[in-house]
Length: 377
Ligand SMILES: [Zn+2]
Ligand SMILES: [Zn+2]
Image (cartoon, rainbow, N blue to C red; front, top):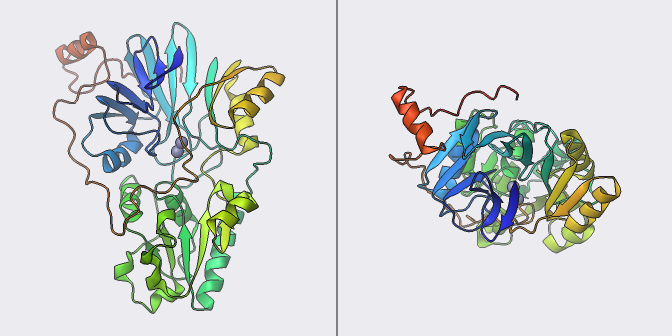
């Protein structure tokens, strides 16, 4: 049902793409990270909680938001989006056609995350899985342990009159860190690339502690502050204003001593928005799938392991990157993503034209036919 084309993952009967890396007419987007959500597509379909993120990052796009679990039918393929537990609005794409079910999971994690809906296990015949941390050495500690370590580091710095600079990916990771911080330790300051995303999270109903821009905090107060900034801010002139500070980087890669050393930061906190090895295995098992397609990460190792364990497994070469290591795109001081525009007036809905006509005739307004609740979900 799904193949790789030059443009991206392609659903053959449905004639649409999933997270395409080249411009196409119809794109189902799993989440707003730059390697999955790109500009230039004709029509976007995404989980409703992620639409604000897409608009803030991609500007004026024609996008339809679909509630988690809701179904839309396109060229005979029933499409529904289900939480992937990765970042706000992240979705697994469930495709059903002629009794065959495929699930493309995008990026996912199975661990709980206070800033997004939890990963939903879906039964399917074929499961497309990422493999960013697809090696048995990758095992995360419970996140509360990591948050406790972060707060202890911040508290000690504050006691010694030193600012704490936490470098992390601006979308997703930064908000997850915020959700785990203890605001009684000191002020929480966010870089200009992080704060607009906090706003989108809060608008989506995610509780985050109060945050301030650096310009709103007295220089004296910065000594007890934690500053959340994208990796590109580390070592830039922007950080000089903090005087004496300790820096840290939060990523799954911080499990590796070499990665910590290359970052050249005082502390590495192991915190990932991707499943670790046990998480990947549990997710795959939970689908009941007999066929598994492995994308971005440790493809050969995971494919070999899955084949040895009775799965029909193969890899897909994609152009998805590594959002755990990537530098945030909007790294400039104060750079804010484009303001969210109003929806395009003639936004075409994700229904076959006859159905759209039928919906209009039936007076169902802009809620198209084919968006009925998925009875068997
Ligand atoms: Zn991602
Ligand atoms: Zn990714």
